Every structure is written in C-alpha cells, then in structure tokens.
Length: 182
Image 1 (cartoon, one colour):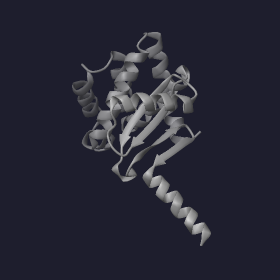
Image 2 (cartoon, one colour; image 1 turned 90 degrees about the vertical axis):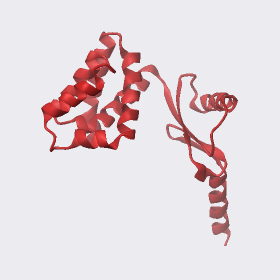
Image 3 (cartoon, rainbow, N blue to C red; image 1 turned 180 degrees about the horizontal axis):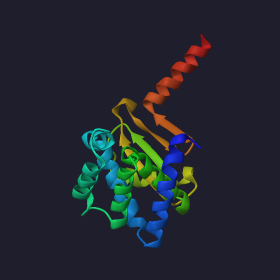
C-alpha cells in the first residue's frame, strides 16, 4: 500500500462507516465531490490550509465559516479533525480515497472520457452505452473532459483499460509504425 494510502485510508474508512451508520453516505459522497472540486479549483484555499504558518485554530475557524452550512455535521467534524491532526493539507487525498472506497463497496466503475470538443447529450448517451460494455457494469461514474489536443475523437479509460479513438492517437501510432519500418 502506498504511503499516502496508509495515511488517508483510516480517515476515509472511518468517515465512511460513520456516514453509513447515520444513513448519509450518498449525501456525503456528493459533498465530497463538491469540496474536491472547490479544493482543486481554489489553490489559495488548499495552500492556506496546508500552510504550517496558519495556526490550527485559525484553520478550524475558516473551515467552520466556509463549510458549516454546506456539509453534514459529521463531515464538518472530519474537516476539523484533519485540521487538529495537521492533515488538512491532505484533504483532497482523503476525499479521493473516500470516493474510491465508496465505489468499491457499491461496485461502481470509474470511467474517464476525454473528447476533442464538447459532445451533445445524444453523443453522451451513446458513449455511455459503449463505456458500460467496456466496464462490464451498469454502475458507472463518468468524468468527462475536453482536450483540444486530441484533434478529434475520444479517449476512454476504465481501470487499466484504455481505448484511444482520437486522431492524435492514430497519428502517434502511425508514426511508431513508420519508425519500425525504416
């Protein structure tokens, strides 16, 4: 088990058990996704919370002001506990581990789909059907990303499976094939 998982797993497992005992798992998972999004899109917040210069009590006060109305009391307790133990800088890792454990418990596959441009709802529906076949399950969580560098097409990754149907991937494979020939 990687070192970071040895730190994050106990927090994630304990929090998932508490949420389960209070019948808040789905609510907590949604809140974890929202906070992860905020954490990743607000480097000022994550850097301030990870800073050793900011005192624990100041971090807890900031957490209280920011999240008291946004999360369940048990989630707020987790945030304060992480601050108390000087682990709030690892919040993103704890929440990602929480989501991994949740998906494992519910047998939900995580798929990342990267397209060259925005896709329509109809295309999303068709892509979802194809990704479900690749994943081998109807329980699927999809992260949609747009990367214009793909030129056209898409890349799907589910676990260790990767399907590269992008123009950039085709050009790369063609270049490798030509390099072998010469």
